[in-house]
Length: 247
Image 1 (cartoon, rainbow, N blue to C red):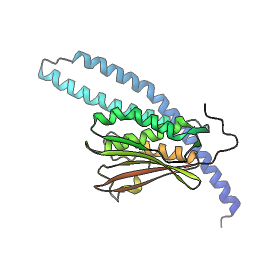
Image 2 (cartoon, rainbow, N blue to C red):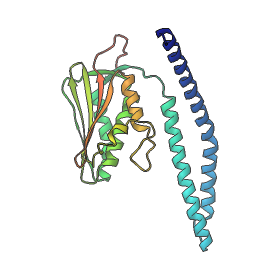
Image 3 (cartoon, rainbow, N blue to C red):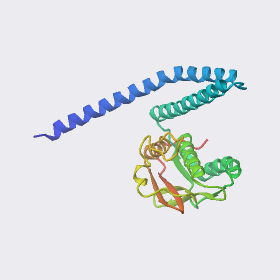
């Protein structure tokens, strides 16, 4: 019969093994990245030789090489996102003027959204003020949600970003008018390596979740097929005593 002491010891061993596994996987990914880059570079050089194929055989070879090169690029993207996920530094919390930072981020993405025929708007909430956070991490998380919204929304649709005070927390919402996510798929969207996109790595939303958790918050989702999806990033609004002032 197990005892609390034995269960605690086993849990500690499991955590140590998981930590070791994570380190090994990160090291493996790092070692694979260099030869994969070499393969990709050489494929590009070979494709240069087939830029203007003359024979049927050359055209067939060019098509096959292009397919291989596309897969190498996909693997490189997966590796880079995995390394970013596995080796992200601990957040350094400082006082962040959240509305001002999000406004600038939205303005940066407006042209890209406009080119796709999308309307991107920001609705800043009142009394948001300074929020303790690592803006580099938060910016990457919100940008990830914006990219997901862009990919999910057809031309003519809208993407709305808003902030609102909710008790001791601040909510950052990214809402799109896209196709929505089927109910049977929704429980899996936060799983690593699960993606509904053909070119997705499945690490975007898990990374956003981790950023939220590292800030003492959470990420939630509401979606309805045919109407759209809303992601809510909940962040504590409290100001820790050791938070540095906004630069």
